[in-house]
Length: 512
Image 1 (cartoon, rainbow, N blue to C red):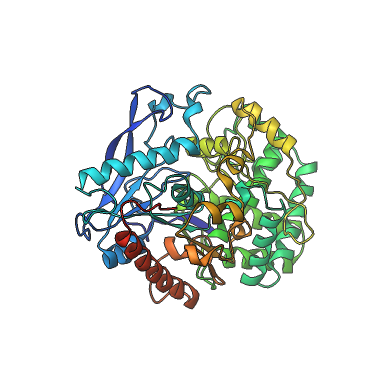
Image 2 (cartoon, one colour):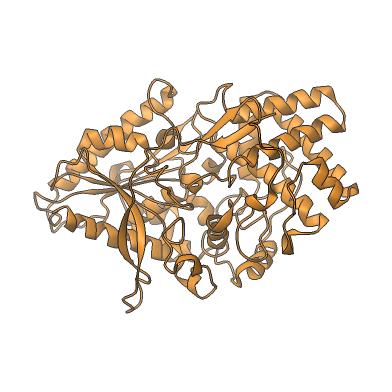
């Protein structure tokens, strides 16, 4: 039995602080809410030293997680005598404009990337004042460098693009920019997940696909009670849209698929200790035994493993992602709690706007909402190169899902058309962004994999052994693969050069 659980071994717990944030930056309303954030001052050299802003993303940041990226706090900040700030994204965790009453259709009008970027700009300006930083071009100016992985990696790059007067440079790790520009084939993501599984354990994709097809065949002929019993589901089962045999079967199928997506993201360093390797070993062993029961037992064990965390996205969304894998399931985990794996809100299902998974509770609901509005991701199942059953993604499916869930229509190209996410747009509009990509990561198919303009500091660093923002979220040091160690060294060199550029620039210089 494979057990996958959330692990905060590599996080840096911290004491939360609260910032009076504007509810709506684009109106004359003076309404504010309490935004949670974390601050690390140990290495800060005072006015004239840099500020590193770790972008919050699609999940709350509880104090036991604190800072996502120890390498940033313990190495990068120490090297450059930087202040480290980490604000939580609006509508996630405890940063709720109207508390538990924040999730109505009317109030979600201010839940979007545009408002989140404005939050960060307003927050940075306030913090610069609090720490006695002076204007750009003066000795006391504190250069601002944003850092993020996954959706927060996208936010990090967009802070530099959209707020060049506030942000001087950015690190965008595993940033799915090409997904949000609608430039990625829908089958590319899970094809990469499949390729990485084969690299982790030879024969894994064939064994996993066989088990999925066995699971589908079993559920077609079984009753809902049979399914609940066979897969050890906790009772009572979810009600509403998530009820009924067909929806029950789809929830279980998708949660199993989502678990492999999560194992792929955490597959670093790629050895025989990762969750992906151990899950693959379980399925290959079941396939070698043959028969229906072995395949279904492997699926049952995989699902039970996801119940060890309240969300299979794990705490803090994809921005902070670690898994610990044990040889046996801990005592007390006797059933799979489907309800705890579903997003909150009406008409909730496991298969949501993001077909890599949204997560559970209100955080899962909010990521479902974001991928129903401006962060549309075309991710589907159907390529012969994938280890998953065929299920084609379509705009029609997304439209129906989003209308039923939130009463909204997706706007897949709105940000790309207004901001300019094409390579040529980025070359023309911005500078000093480093894009990093783990090439074992499914999200790398939507990343910027080549230097866009080295002369402007638009750089790409690819990690052949890397997974999802491995250079940020995993433990650092001797356990790192050589490519990640080299990336750390290159990032330090590049950032040092950028900070000198910013400090040496005249106050009248245009910084784009």
